[in-house]
Image (tube, rainbow over all chains, first blue to last red; front, side, top):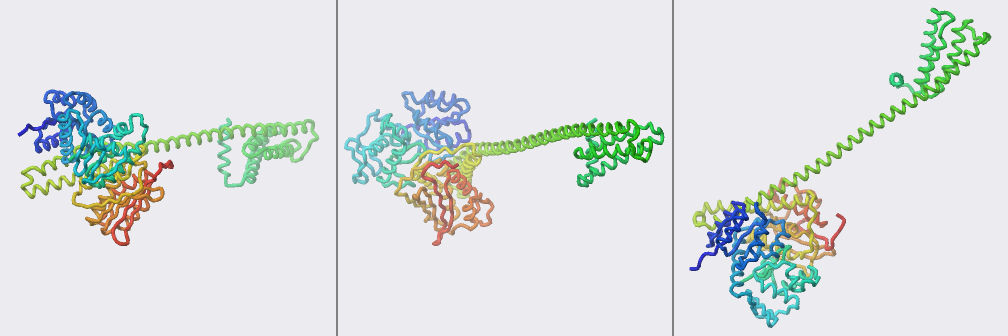
Length: 234
Length: 392
């Protein structure tokens, strides 16, 4: 069948790198470990991986540097950040700088694999669509029709306010990706909207209620605590 | 010289210190007058009329005025001395006579000299006393200073020690986190490996490794939170958050760790948007849910309820299990750190988790309560102020 997807694992902790690579191999990926930033960059250029797992705390260089180097390239290789819990600002910065997702230490294997799957699917979709946007999004039982400005849940129309719809639309366009609060605020209310976080949060709470979301088992919108929101994919 | 006198003064006041001042001064006066009398008598035997009894008495007066308090005794002694000299040691002996030429002059000048000496010694004494007092004050000040310095150092040392303890704990926790993540991850990889899956014995061993590593990870997270709060060096990193999002995230974490348990969630109609450090509040909710799962014995009726009560955003965790012991309830109520060695077997291990909850809630100026529902089951409840409070 098709070729194995190649994942570059830039992580200096040998034990972590080891189990990640084993888990990836067991799940039909090809894993390339790199134990330093320099090694990571050179392996990136020689192997052209489909995805990069990047630890921000590397011994020889700042993980952000690698992110900067990689994210501007035409390959548009998606990057998932591996970070420590108590560094929210770092995560937000990395996401705003072009990282596709992040995972927090300590993390579980299934969580990691789920994020890799989502990110790869998203990146494939983006490459296929070549930047052109869809008019209608189908996510589980939800249908969002951008042109008609219409939302259907199980075929039933739900009314959303203007801003709620804009948020939903934004989340659909970037389904699978974490959108930071600032990103959403800027795209819905404009760069100089001067809108406070609270309005976004309240809108989000309303959206969740209208979608009849169960917070312990969200079907559509996932909260990334202290960072932003993410629309789940099919 | 004055030092020698002062030493004498102190020796005498020490020796006669038991007496009240008036008898002591009288005793000193009498003793020195007697000494002067005896010395003059001896001198009289050797030198006859040309004796120096006047000088001997003046010397006695010097001593007396020096060793007694005030002028009075010295002046009295000089008068008595003048009389004695005239009566005992001047011709005609044993008669008080002023008829000889020069006698009145001699007596008056002796009394006058004595008084002068009295005045001078008193001044010297005063100065010496002041000098001593100054010296004592300086010494006391110096000692006080030294003690204060010592105390300051002790406090500083204690603070340093506390900071070091926090740093070590944090460093250890950080260093534990990486290998534990690796252990848990490696165990997960093994769990899906054919060699392990096909052997029931191996499978259960690896499952144990995984679940213990996961508990340790949870404990390390707790330790990190508690060092962050207890050492007080890092202020809370508060931001406005939707409580339902935090609670939802906590539920997700719990669901991932305990997939077989069902936990229901009741959201408030009110918007609970308030300042908090979301990761810490999430940890409180995770701990409370984990306690309910591990210690209540109830699988299906654990309930998480968010509501608003006056100016508080309240989170309640309820189960239909066997309830909590009075020990646990009291510890929560009093805000005392919970002993980790509770007698009741079922509450063992609740200690650290609840301690962390207490610390976090306290740092948020919230309240924390626990009790049993009369219809059965335990209720843990905490509230956070809806508005930022500044009485920290």
